[in-house]
Image (cartoon, rainbow, N blue to C red; front, side):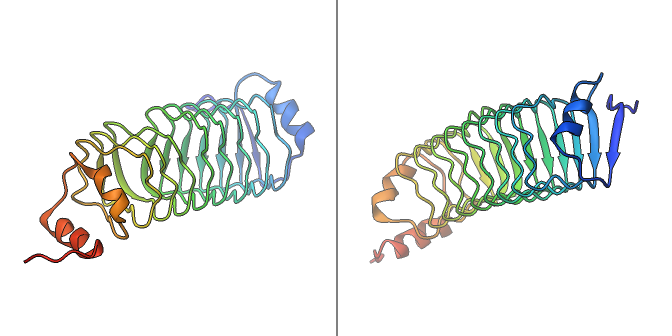
Length: 230
């Protein structure tokens, strides 16, 4: 058993559901390294505390699975399905989960660092204290998520659906909101001085009332709204 409490390790294999079920029935979590789980049905399994490193999980289903405190490093999972899974306190580093489904997923205290989540669907996700750093969420769907009082570092939300998201008192450091859907979003006391606000529409301008922006951003927004300074 290593310092992370991992008792069993599978390396370089393509385990099916039955093998994963046997591992999950043992004592303590397991680690999968360089395993191929493409299109595997791992839904509703209890895999909390497991580690996934350099695994292929393309189109795999973890729907309804218990994945509390799991660690994911350099995994590739385009179109993976985490619908309804419990990913509280999970850690994702250097992963590619483009177009993955995180609908109704519990992401409390979860963290994504250096990940690609382009086109991901986080509709109805519960994401209190979700941490994002250097994450691509281009075209993703995140309606109603709260980032209140959080710092988002280098998060690309271009063309993302941010309807009714809460960015109050948040700091968006090096983030992009270019052409995002912002209907009903809140930005009171948010620090947007280092954010890309390109593509802002006149109908969205009022959403930024009470937020802090730079003089350069103000000039850009005036220009994009078709106004001229006399």
